Length: 98
Image 1 (cartoon, rainbow, N blue to C red):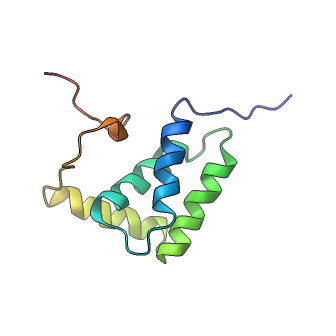
Image 2: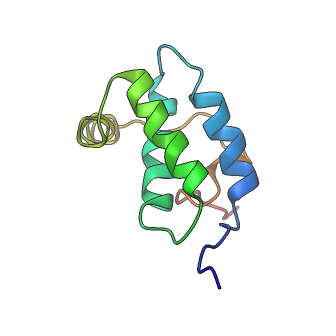
């Protein structure tokens, strides 16, 4: 019996990752999204295709996880705030209060 699981946000995350993997020059929001997906799927029991696509995206962008996290920490510390408050932010600390 396999212990591999499908993440509840797989469909949404797959769409986001598919849009990232083809970007030649990632924007700030793209970097944030990839870092968020890495955190979500790192050590997740399953989702090997997602994890492989994350690695392919890093390779395509010519950065490693350490560089990505350094870049995103810098973005957040310089008051980066997503201007897009859509469903794409599910699971990222999105404030759902009115």
